[in-house]
Amino acid sequence: MDLLKEIGDSRLYNLHSHTQYCDGRADMEQFVVAAVEQGFSHYGFSPHSPVPIASPCNMAADEVAAYLAECERLQCIYGDKIRLFAAMEIDYLSSEWGPSHDFYQSLPLDYRIGSVHFIPSEHGMIDVDGRPEDFAVKMCEHFHEDLRHVVTTFYHQTWAMLNAGGFDIIGHFDKIGFNASNYQPGVEQEPWYCQLVADTIDLIAEKGVIAEINTKAWDKSQRLFPSPQWLSMLRQRHIPVVVNSDAHYPHLINAGRDKALSLLL
Ligand SMILES: [Zn+2]
Ligand SMILES: [Zn+2]
Image (cartoon, rainbow, N blue to C red):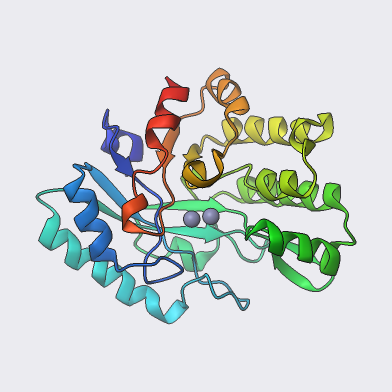
């Protein structure tokens, strides 16, 4: 499917959302009802993928069939009002487990989002995507307070995911900047940090994937992922973008969209 062609010139869509099948806070149908009420043209579900490690935020492998069946059921009921997509936000863990893995490639998904939430440590894979308070604890417990190592590893995981391929949209590609800058204010302006992001953008352009402008944190923290300072570089590299709310609640499906669109325009 040509996702960008499918969306066309609509500005009221969301391709990244979470429901009862992972860590979302409402049933899929409640999100569809909210999207229809707000006049959305397209709405995509993207549960956190099953992963071979313990993670309370990710869906179980044995629930994938039920999830896909629910997508079909909702498309039958609401398909004349809105175009629904069955997708997945797939975690990249290693060369053995990521969007290019046979398991994900064999699923009948409309598109795939590739995201990094976990990075390796001497104690196994650690989720570095949670709240800043939790991140600070993990910095001490797993990473010897070495922020540069954590940030660099996050981007190296991102590069490995891009090189392995198998996905259409890269999710919140500078998300580590949020926790990193809470831990050490100003780190996102440091030359070494900027070089990691710039190299990531170059690789996104080279691989031809769509970059997401993720608005999930706008209302609470006035953050976009990527940070607005990188939008001009995305444009210079002719990288296609989509604006996604990464909603976990039905009332937030459109949160931050106006801000992201105004910055893009
Ligand atoms: Zn994510
Ligand atoms: Zn997400």
